[in-house]
Length: 308
Image 1 (tube, rainbow, N blue to C red):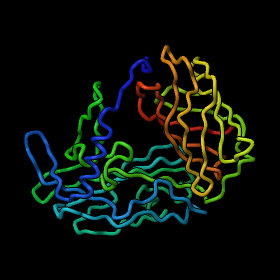
Image 2 (cartoon, helix red, strand yellow):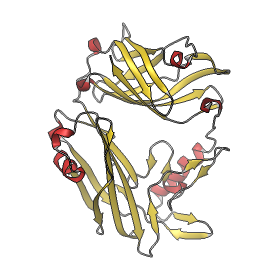
Image 3 (tube, rainbow, N blue to C red):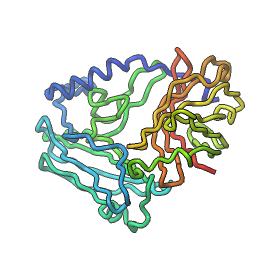
């Protein structure tokens, strides 16, 4: 089964070094095949939030100043699609831009108009995904498509940006691939309403069943998620430990071993994080990477935990 294959990310440090060099030295060159080309990249002058907490959907205002640091961009085309209450929309063109820097500013009404939906169709927990394509002044096209990972752990670049513009933690420099989710208001987290049974679902990981969540008696921002590997017939000996930031509703996961014998592998645990949506029934949207201690993992999988 798919869980019998692991990968080891052995060049994480090298990739991060390349990213930092690209931001610090704007004359970094981009390679493609046997050619060496001047890079044509764009990014936000100040990176926007991944989760935009608002009191009402009508208050959404997302964006920032997008810059062309090398002065090599002729055209920047930006596309978007969304996940609205779990339904994936068509991809639409946000705009084509030829003058830099420019301010990208999108209200909830703008998003609705672009997608051809009513603003009432946009809710807390909905996500919006953007992909940029850059045409340089010498006609080379760079586009936001993440590298794949080979069996040996090496990056297999797609598009023209290669790994020099790729951060394995956050994706491409934020002008090529970026997204945001509409979050609940700050301080809306209520530990008294979190405990209970949840449906844990992941299409990519093949999970669909019930887990239980309890709240730490001494720390209401720490919760325990029990029973997730049991859904695969692999008994867990301890629950996952999650921490909730009540100001941002961001969830972080402690890398605690939860299963001593996972399909024959010792010491299985999850890394990752996500967001809780207290104003949407305490739903959790999580990106969890199943790992085997000292061996590696299977990559981040999308999970949703919905209170029953």
